[in-house]
Length: 127
Image 1 (cartoon, one colour):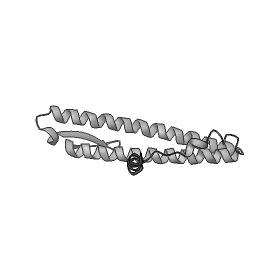
Image 2 (tube, rainbow, N blue to C red; image 1 turned 135 degrees about the horizontal axis):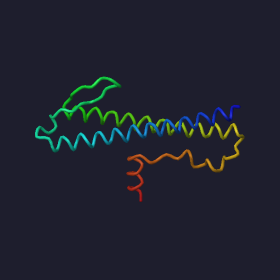
Image 3 (cartoon, one colour; image 1 turned 90 degrees about the vertical axis):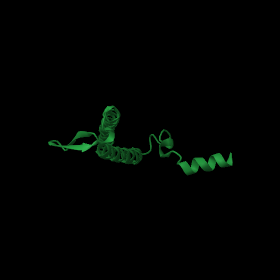
Image 4 (tube, rainbow, N blue to C red; image 1 turned 45 degrees about the vertical axis):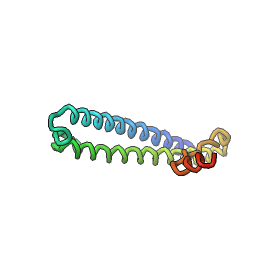
């Protein structure tokens, strides 16, 4: 029963990552659309665009503010997706432990994380 619950958690986490990624992609599309409309509009960044806040509330804002809000949302989506992916790795290891390590050799590389800028710079400096 515990194994099924852990597997269900993993599936729901994966679905949440997919949903967040769709929202992030829609956010990117809106951002590109705003930037294109600002370039073609005679008033540029000060031209107004309508934003939907929530499900029923619309507000007209200058493109520079709308762009800033969408960029902040993009950062939030990225951090939430990365957090969910990290949690997914933990959940996979917990499931593996509950299954008594049946797949331990296939999960060995799951704890890898990418190098950050400082680590890459240190590697380039040394080699």
